[in-house]
Amino acid sequence: MTQGNNDDTTNNDDDIINNYEYFKHKFNKARDASAEKYKDGSKRRLTNIIKKKFNTTIIGSLAAFEDQFGELWGHGLAVNDLDDDQQYWREVWMETRAKVLDNGNSNLRAAESEISQYTLSWNRYVTKFNT
Image 1 (cartoon, one colour):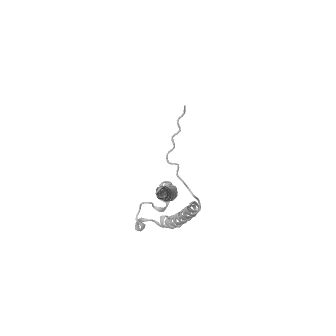
Image 2: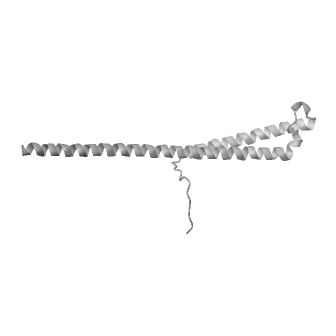
Image 3: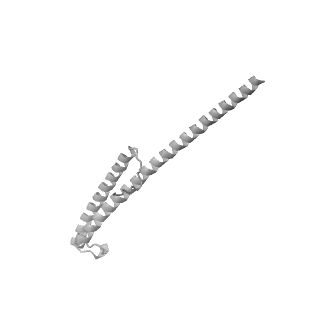
């Protein structure tokens, strides 16, 4: 009878150890999945920020040229209202504008491709207190 109690205790101990190992494994797996999801979110966040900055830079630069030199090609006027010089410069501007946009988009895709090759983790907002 003593032997039977000892076997029950051993089986209970084995069950506890097995349950512990099972839950530990599940916890570690969930933690790893959460960390991977966070890294993916960090990479996506950085990509979106860089994309916005690229677009702002490109569009802002084009707008600055339009503000300063737009009168050459009748910026803001209908195509029918342009004189011959303005029509010529409008064609030159549209070709130049297309090249700038194509170059910017090409470089944006290259930057996104480069980012995809890295493992990233956003450090969130870091506050440094001077003491």
